Image 1 (cartoon, rainbow, N blue to C red):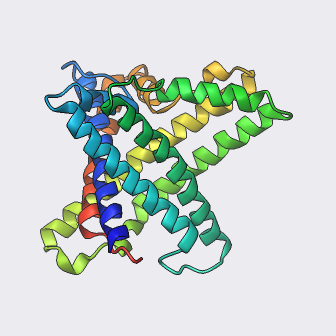
Image 2 (image 1 turned 90 degrees about the horizontal axis):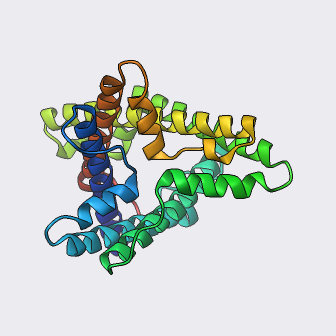
Image 3 (image 1 turned 90 degrees about the vertical axis):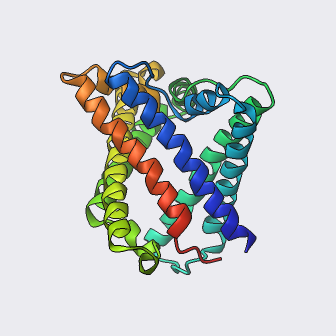
Length: 261
């Protein structure tokens, strides 16, 4: 079915983007060039390669597929989870994810067509934080968003610990070695993503506390903050490797995920 193909293409594209972010951060951690960047920085890295615009167009189409799949999950509930509160929260989360990746897909297509990408995730985060803070009770709203993102980070830790992603995989089609590696990489990747979410949420809480939108940071800012800590290169390297693992994990999802449409 076409929705399943789009979903698998989407997981592949998402995995490529995260893997590039991780590889660039690993290079920065070990002093081999590279940089702490975000998903849009990964798109720019693709664009700089030979045949970059063609590759970027493919990634952009893949991301569009991922967006469509996330909206299908939000609207149709293909796994028939029902109407429990946590299931509605999952559907709302899928819709929000679809919106976020729609912006990333748009950036990829713009780059492929020769236009410049939008600002980094930190600048984008600061922009919407400033807009939110200008609303009534804006500081409280920003703080609430920060707390929710921290909660999402801890949920990623829970996902990593329980390896909940396994129930979505066609484990019977894997060899024992593939299953073992898929589990380890998935746990490592989910945990690394959780670390990033917690840091981003903490920055938002600081922005709310100080009433300063410039305190807010995105993925690139979160990675840079790790590099500035004691033993920073080690911390950055571990989380960066985790993001590479998450990229591979998305590749596993693309191949083995049980997709019901």
